Length: 430
Image 1 (cartoon, rainbow, N blue to C red):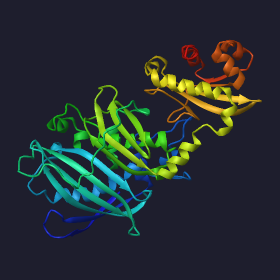
Image 2: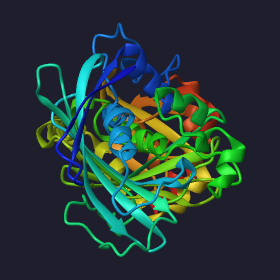
Image 3: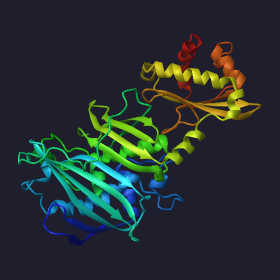
Image 4: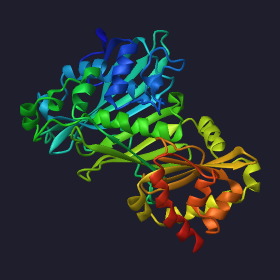
């Protein structure tokens, strides 16, 4: 990446703009993707498009749009000094909230111009809140994204300023019901060291002595790293990893994640808005709250339609069973703790596969839905005919018998299939 200051605009007022150019390459896009946990394996290459510049659909993860703005214009605005706020150390600067709105898919290379402006300074008594808006334009001058950075400066309050701002993009509480979906990502012990290569070199995330000055016993993960991981989770769950579907991302940074901890993203769909909340599995702390991602409604509707059972499946007896199981799993969240596995059912008729159903008993609160697993590979795949499936769940046929006769085919960890027995027994009592 190359950062070059273009100009300062205006006078010495608090509305002064700073314009900075920022040049990046495919290497920066890939480094960022690695920094927020993108990965591939022999069985899952769905994120290859974010890691391989030769991929036919090579794309930037949408949350990358924060970095050019932060690494250029934000630093320029902050460097000019904040009215009413005394000089402060990076150790006392905490990222409070982040909003980004994407007007166009972010390019995978090029030079953009970021124009930043201080829009408000709030007095929270224990500290000062600084709100900066940054617009990012491409080489043609078209608007790519709008960022809003909210930074909390510990100990800088008490200067008699206002406490709220009409310019702030608000967070939105998640629905009170159980999450519609949840995904997890275990961060690496070196996650912060890897993420900082994208340009956020605050020593708070790498140097233990500096972290202690900021009140932390050990270096913490960048909040924007968790932000990127949450974005990946939502794209995987709802977008088939289509980066063009993401229109806006907002969240509040609540508590830190330590490198090596597991981040769980809980998701709730409300129309084309996906609410989310992230927590550290190990500490139990909520780390991101009030978050949402707005998706392209038309594209989301297309994906939702394609993941619903086709009308032709109405003649399959197994479809009604899976619908019953869907309700049973929703009302029995404890089953996830007991089973801890994802199953894919291939239903056949006349020797041809005619339907697929996923039974996710690994990711809380559990789910049953039409199609292949979202977000991860099935631990066990079971293939059998519609009639044999009905015989199996009714208890008239035994799994071992079907398997020995070649009428039930298993792949993956076949021992996991034994955990399904209790599920079907419970279903038969419904």
